[in-house]
Image 1 (cartoon, helix red, strand yellow):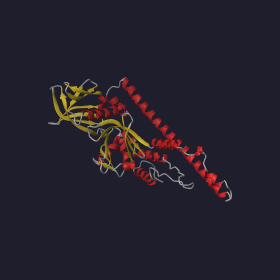
Image 2 (cartoon, one colour):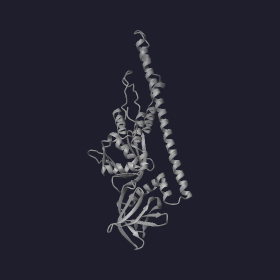
Image 3 (cartoon, one colour):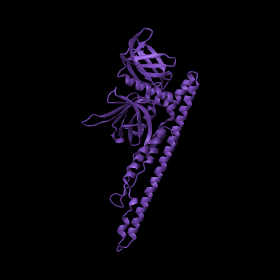
Image 4 (cartoon, helix red, strand yellow):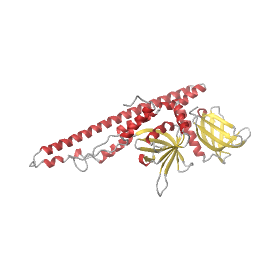
Length: 383
C-alpha cells in the first residue's frame, strides 16, 4: 500500500457505455493502478491495476475528438477525452509507469499472486530476471574495468614522477662545468602527452562518474512540452537525455540552484540566470525513489520538499523493494565514484611544479556521508 502513491491527476471526460454519454471528472494515476472519479458526486467509475492493461492507444472519437483508449485483459475498452494539459502528456506518463511495472520483478510477482500465471507470463518474468542479472553483472564488470584503468593511469603517473625525480637528481649531482646538463630536461617526442590522450582520459573520467541512470518522462518549459528520456546522476552533476540517448542538457554540480521534490515520483531541477530565462526541467519516473536519496546526499543544501517530509520518508522506507536500495548503498556508490576521480599531476610552469586536481567530492563530504550512514545504523560503527 505504501507504493500506491498518487503520481498525477488530470481533468478529463470518461465515456460511460451504459448511458452513452461523456462524464467529466479526474483521471488519477498511482504507481500500481489507474482510476477515474466524477466531479459532481466523486464516485469512482473506473479503477483497475496497471498490470491488467494490454494496450494504450491514441484514437479519435467520432473522427473529431482526440481520445486516449486503454484496453484491459478482459477486452474492456475505456475511452478518455478532453485531457488536460494534453493527450500526449497523459499518454507518455501512463505508458512509462505501465512499462516499468511490466519490466519489474514486483509487477510479475503481483500478477502471479492475483491471477493464474500463464506460460507467457512465466517466460516474461524469467526474461526480466535474466535481463536484470545481466545488467547487474555488466555494471560490476564495468566498474572493475574502470578500477583497473584507474590503477594503470596511477602507475603511469608514478612512473612519470620517478622520471622527473631521476632527471632532477642527475641535474643536481652533475658538476657546474658539465655542458650536457641542460639537455637532460628535453623529453623525447614519444613521452610528450598528446591532446588525444587527454581528451580520451577526460571522456573516461566522465564515464567513471556515473552513479545511476533511470528512464523518465521529461517536461520542459510547459506542461504540454513532454518527451520520454532518461536522467543520469553523475558525481560531477546531472545529465538529461532523450529516448535516442542524445544529450538534452547537462547540469554541472555547482550550476544546480534548486531541486524540488513534488511527489514520490516527480522532481524538478532549475538553474537560475540573470537577464535570461532559467533552465528548468520537471521529471517523472517510476524509478525516482531510487534517485531521491542520492540527490539528497549530493545536493543536500539545494533540496526542497514540497510535500510532507515525514510522509515522503516513511513511504520511501516502508517499501521492501526500496529498502534494498538503502541510504548506505547510495552513499557507498558516491564514495566509490569519488575514489575513481584520482588527482593527476601537471608539469606546466617548471619541472618542480606538480598541480593536484581538486577532487569532485572533498574529504569533508566523504566524512559527512560516513557519519550519516553510521547515525542511521546502516553499517558498522565508524572508526
